[in-house]
Amino acid sequence: SVGIFTLGAVSFMVATFGGVMFAKIMNLFLSEENKINPLIGNAGVSAVPDSARVSQIIGLQYDPKNHLLMHAMAPNVAGVIGSAVAAGILLSFFMG
Image (cartoon, rainbow, N blue to C red):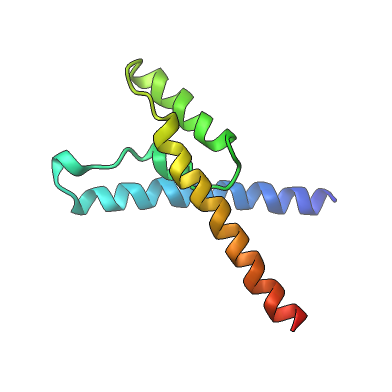
């Protein structure tokens, strides 16, 4: 069970890092007025609502007027939907 916990923790860290880096890479190609806050990339992990709250708390630490919670919930819910679709695909392969 320690191995499963470790695998889950590493997966969570990799997904968070990937989301933040993907948002930063996207910002290289977007105009100045269309840039995306990289904290929104963190919220793509399907840990509802904790990863969205982390985005909100970190955003408020840097700018007290920066309210990200509702913006962070969209990728958060998309992560849940993506996880459900991936689970359905895996079940269809293994069941039959």
